[in-house]
Amino acid sequence: MGHHCCSKQKVKRGLWSPEEDEKLIRHITIHGHSCWSSVPKLAGLQRCGKSCRLRWINYLRPDLKRGCFSEQEERTIIDVHRILGNRWAQIAKHLPGRTDNEVKNFWNSAIKKKLIAQGFDPNTHNLLSRNHHQNNKIKSSCKSKTSNHPNSTSVFTIETLSSSKEVGVISMDIIKASLAALPLIASTTTITIPHSQTSWDPLCESSLTSTIYNYMNPVSIPTTTNIENSNLATIEYQNQSTSNNLLSSSSLTPSGFGIINENCMWDVTDFEPQLIRSTNGQEEVQLVQEEGAQVLQLQENICQEVYKVNHEFNNNGQISENVTFDNSNFDFEFVDSALMPCEIFANVNSIDQLAWDC
DNA sequence: AAGCAGGACAACCGCAATGGA
DNA sequence: ATCCATTGCGGTTGTCCTGCT
Image (cartoon, rainbow, N blue to C red; front, side, top):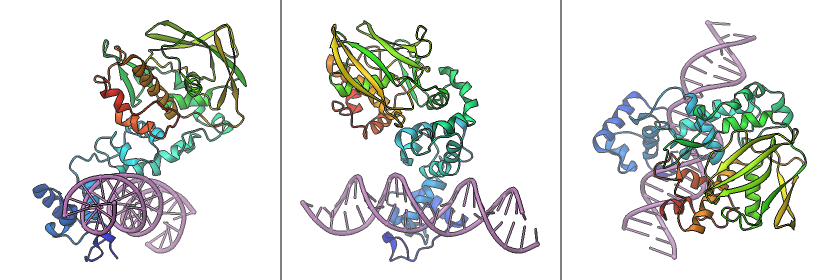
């Protein structure tokens, strides 16, 4: 029995012989493959069109990169898989010369096992368990979490128009490594958000939640948010154990893009924000830790960044001048696809809108 | 040397999407 | 609007190779 598409034909199955390869290459080189179903007949092959197509795409195409995956490619696969899941064709688009089949096989045979060995669930990229990662080898690799941006190989890079320098990088490797080494956060903390803060302040509770999640950090508790001017918001984080020492801060443009401090990592637990009361013109939000909750998704955070871009865009009618998409490595298709399953941004239509409406 | 297990990778299968009639 | 051929994709299976007993 052949495929449903070629059940009437006598088709050969199984591995391709060098002669068959040669026939297919010769045919496609001369005539192309405008219609795969007619290729076998024209090329003199006892195969179905589907099989010819697969053989060409996965093996015979001249632009294929053969050989082992590089470390960079591996990191890219992990980064993109973290966002897109098993969308192999999409992942392969980020790896020139690699096919979806090749990426899929590499994932199943190598990366999956490596992630499990490091204590990560290969499907969700979450830590399998706190005990697991604390007792695992990943512990030693955590030393590398202090490595700075130049060494990062993340697929997420953003450039500014003025400096044309990379200013924003999210590295999943660093996030994962850092998560493994982070201590438990206190069960409750608060974040105050002034009423007057309107340039990037979310308009509704769900957006408020997004903001809080965005800057949640198990080591550095966000204690205050300041709007220094219309173009820059600063969020300060305070160490839970040494409450007087300011650990870090992240600067963000109202668009949401900016330097993402690598000390600022997301917690491995969920926090349920509750709007407590209004006092002295301030909203006080209490974050309550949920027992056994799941790790926050990077996807969600990216969506939140995108939301802020969109939000700012909608408010001002144009995108912030110090952010350019034309000069950036920012992959709109990629983020757009990441955005799709995220339901928390009622106001976000598509990243395409952000790119082309201006 | 033979048998077996596991890994790597090529190929297949079935379903969904797409586009033309 | 519907049907059908074709293409694209992801999951699964089959085959070959290698290392171990």
